[in-house]
Image 1 (cartoon, rainbow, N blue to C red):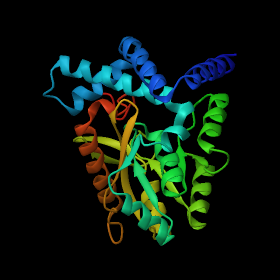
Image 2: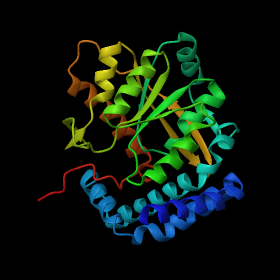
Image 3: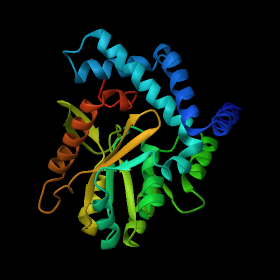
Length: 283
């Protein structure tokens, strides 16, 4: 009953946002979440994470960032029904479009790694519709299977893109997709129950090593990239240089990726999803 109710509410919300224009939906969703989110219990996690990463910040700055985070999350939700329209419009700008074209022309499978920054859901359709680059996604499935099915369908864009779960079956599907020569995107900023502890903002954080293991197994490049919200419903996508993989220890490669994430998050702290229980709670 709980799963069914959640599914109905989400479909109704997405249906409502879908009848609005992309800009209006984004603005309305952002305002709604900014108003309600800071009072939700999970905001304690965000405040604790911010205090851990930025110990010199005032409580006022932390509270302002939490409000901004909720606004960004509300925009992400409200933009879901409009992902294709946004991706095909001039709301997306590429800082280094030549790098994407080189990847496409090279025809080599590539692992893109990023985090929950800006509107992360826009990365796959933006590459598909503007660069002609297929990038399937690895994701953590929601606990509600009905919601999971709905979101996977929304991310498919008529079957052009696939979503692989962060589990054994999903790993096999990811491996197969890369072996077939397509690209895969992975968000590597969430806490995992398996992996290795690598400092993140100076504190031990359990991190999955799947992207490193896949890259070593298939000898394919790992390229960090991000999408940032420049204003309202407008975005910029940027790629960094590929991580150095060959002959290096896995923990050093993960640390390099954490350096990218730390720089991106510090630049736009309100655009990262601080609600993850990324670090072990202090005793």
